Amino acid sequence: QVQVVESGGGLVQPGGSLRLSCTASGSNFSINAMGWYRQASGSTNDLIVAITKDGTTNYADSVKDRFTISMDSAKNTAYLQMNDLKIEDTAVYYCLINSDKGMSRGQGTQVTVSS
Image 1: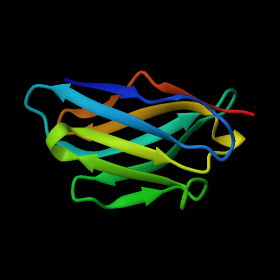
Image 2: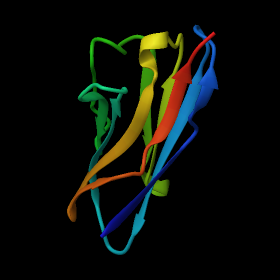
Image 3: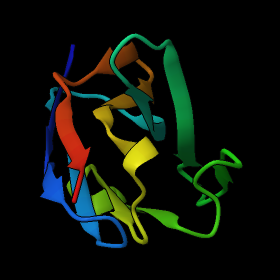
């Protein structure tokens, strides 16, 4: 089983930046890909970004050119750098991990963009 912990959410003004972190832990697992999805109040889940173990990235149009995902394989950690944040980015952000143990998700971290 893989445990997932996110951190780095908070309150930021429009145009500001935040960096989220996601760390996976457990015994004898191998990560295939990591990603983030978000859920705004009253909305469905929205997969916004993913990175594979070989570094291939994929971004939703809504965050392209503003968000950047990176992964430190040695630390089993992914980072999501979010720049030029907009009010519509407000949501709970969940880290999702695809490993040889299956899919694992974190508890989520709140990101609020407000003036």
